Length: 415
Image 1 (cartoon, rainbow, N blue to C red):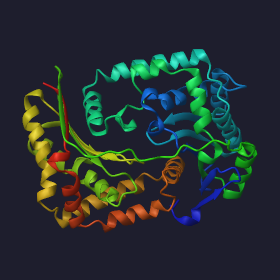
Image 2 (image 1 turned 30 degrees about the horizontal axis):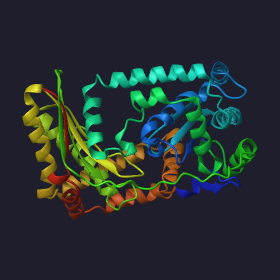
Image 3 (image 1 turned 90 degrees about the vertical axis):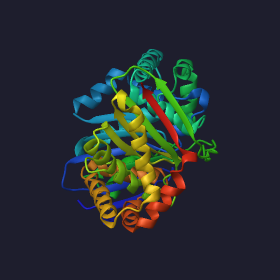
Image 4 (image 1 turned 60 degrees about the horizontal axis):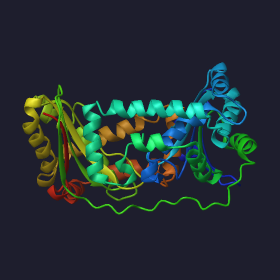
């Protein structure tokens, strides 16, 4: 199945739902993603950090007409998949089923989205599990280092908190809070329904209209995203802890996904830290034997993102590892990549991008995601072209714009 426009169609239903259909008649499977815009940790207040994660955990634990057990039995009886999740920038319901059972599973997903009952005992159970998860993360050096770095880069910005929230905020969340959050954010005009499989647009419209058609937007002001005031700054924190390896992270405040420099930084992530042939792996692990693990990441975000490089190294090598990691970043500012290095990075990134669109679930995810983040389904063809157009001068300019010492945040956990 090719990802070109003749296979992908988009429409907006009368109640504001955006419907995307990627037709694939070669399989009897339909995968769906229901994205809710204006939901996720970006829309959480500081004192309610983690509310969307808790919401995702309890929404499938009971509705007005079904218990948690009955929901599970409905899904399992037909061998389908149905789950709820949240992220920094959106809320997500995922489903997968054979074509014949699709209307039944979509109706169940709609009931979970529209009519969660928020049973008290389920909320308390999920809060306990989340608190255990938060405590568990505090025992993991990588998570501790990343938490420190995130706080340095973002401060009180919602991205500065874990999507799990904090012990204090999760403990204080109430049923009333969850109901208010649900009523405020979950409306049909906030939904993007992305379907991939043996279904065409006309069939999809009929089914979605039948199930969601009576759901009308409330006369409430839709939450709007307003970029938070963030500016790059330098900081350094080290948590002395006896560990088998030291975790070193270096990060910079980086542009959001709609910025012109987004594709350049994506390419830099691939060059520096993606795989066994990446610059960091070859220089710091293979040649110098400094790193147990080394990589880079640059998440796609609606608001300002972060560009991060990290390594795990022996406690005896913490200082030399930190210097090595820093030098590899600064090398990008001082020395241009070779044409061969640039073309290799492009080929790797574009190859992995293409390989990430093979299953119905992957197609439903990526097109729904692009639409939800405001890029539109057309971005699937725009992004590879943007990567292809990146030049050596672009790489060096972006490195000099964002990877300055005055903007560097360093987080270390270890000895």
